[in-house]
Image (cartoon, rainbow, N blue to C red; front, side, top):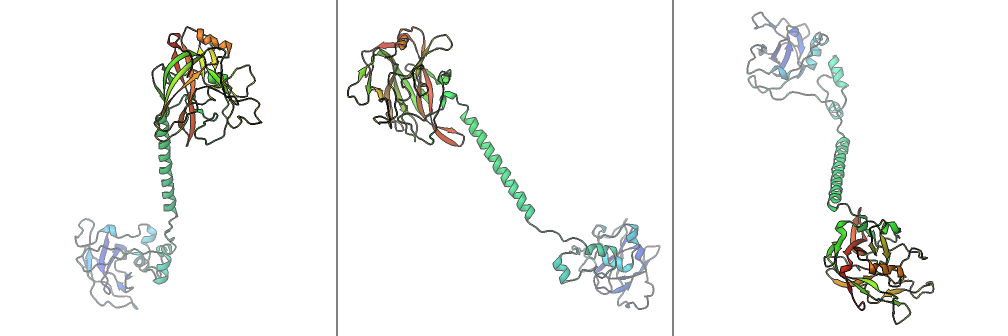
Length: 425
């Protein structure tokens, strides 16, 4: 359907109509002036408008009528896309006043300039109360629908919720990636690499008071290859470097609390001499403890679990194991106390309670129980042997915390490497 444009005779603003309204009266949607629309002849030229209806306002000027056909649009005219008219049969039969009320007016400065602004009515509460919309007085269906149009929501709730969820998802993803990277970097640890350090004279950094209970089977778990070394070969576990120096056959002496003179064991003991170095930058701890090499027998009445320090050999399963040394262990808090029913014992010159600052090193030794007749089998064994010893390794990250921990390392040796020495010193 063709659209025709002409200027209002009163306000000179453009109006657009369809051919159904040619030759009829129409109210200008801008200035509300009632005027008679022209007719178009067969040649496409405007004809003189019919005589005005009685009671209508007289024309004050000749209409500047322009015609634009769909096939040959004039460059100075408005494009059809900027005007919107009803397309259904119902709306095409509306009256002149109704159509004029809902037509889209376009304001231009002169007849040759293409308009760039389109009047777009808004139906919010402020504009309705301040100034009436152009269609308020028009009795049309479209005008009624425009008055009932809901007010556009300007709430900020949805943007706030969206950005909150977006921030949360980004943060959760970053935390998950960090945890996965830390787990991948740390790598899995063997059970003998992070034994809780909760007992002994020098417990190191204490953050909990839990008691680690274990059984004989736990102390005899297979030591993995990366935790094994040989005489003269240094090994590092955590923040501690351990170098086995020698294995000797000697007689050691035990010092009992309350006595000034030590008492030698009934038989010889196997002694493992060590050099230990704290390689950390900011941790201080005692690598060894008298608790680690305490005396323990499976059939004796002992409330403490078996120690992780032991000598093991044999091809049978389970292998023969000889736990701890010749000295009974008692906590320092109970030594000399009336609550204690047994004295505290230490091996003379064993040097198991020295504390190392970062970069410090020390020498010490461990020994088997020379008072245990069954342990003498160690001295006569000619095959390979493994000396398992428990040492402190510094702090270990477990979850979101760092806990003081110990580890078990194994020193492999044979009878050919055992030296004869008159005494341990």
